[in-house]
Image (cartoon, rainbow, N blue to C red; front, side):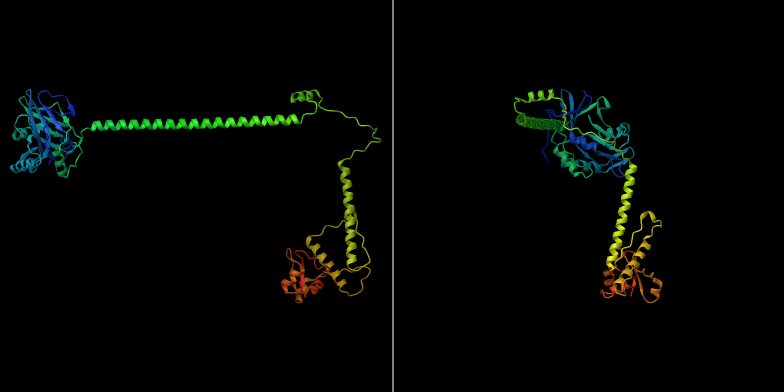
Length: 442
């Protein structure tokens, strides 16, 4: 059990006034008791909680000073609506608990705590108050709930009336703390003493911390700005020195390229300004046009180009025919047909390939030595692919990039049938086959 505290004859130092000051009687309620009464409200099926107010009374200049530093709930109190019955068993348990928990304390009144939203009227309980607490300066504390309005009534020589106000004082109250610990339905609340001082101190600390942070940020920003300015000034100085050195070097270079006899660049600029922008030079000689040159037009260039192209084409054809005659062992050269006399429609790629294949086969037969070459190369007969297929030959179509050697290796695995393929297809040049050309394979 904690040490007992007797506030009188010295009044508490840390107090807080609730309401107006009362001149007839002075009531001082300890902070733990005030907290306990405000947080005590019915739970479950309860409708009302009743208990005793404990403390002492002292007289000073004829004014009673009531000190309430304990509050204890009573048990076995019969509650029937607005009627309360304190049985002998209830009083017996109450006095026993007082001796154990609140020794040397007297009953200074009672309290009634109801649920939230309820209205406790003193007119409903003043008869029970006069019956069970008939002494002088006995208190009746009514609390409407956890957030309800509290009111305190007292009996005196003037009758039963409501107090205008009272005082809350803050002291170390170990008895009330221990009692609140034993109560399971009300958790222990730390003492509210010096609460205002602690709040003020914390608030001042927060303000000082914010001010310190602000000053720190300001100093940091100022330092960063000074650093940036220093770097900028240093960079500017370096640039100026480099530019000065470059200007000196350029001046020395310009001085070195000045003509002889010129003292400085300004004098050279002045001489250049006096000189004309251009110089006209006259060359000796009497060359004049002796005849008028006919103007050349686009039509003349076009006609000349067409004639040159025709001559080049004719020469190319003559050379081709001459070369083919030499390859076949003939002594003749067939004349090329002039371009002006060629009126036939151009052949399609397929017809041109078939004609080239036929000419190649004819040349190959001539090389085979079937007879002496006549004065004029006989044309080879057209290849009948259907008859060849009917006689057991295969028809092969040349693909892109294929050669006759590759086809032999692909189809037979060797080059033994190369001569036979050239003979059947009238090929005079082994390396001359075209994509899309049809070949007869044995």
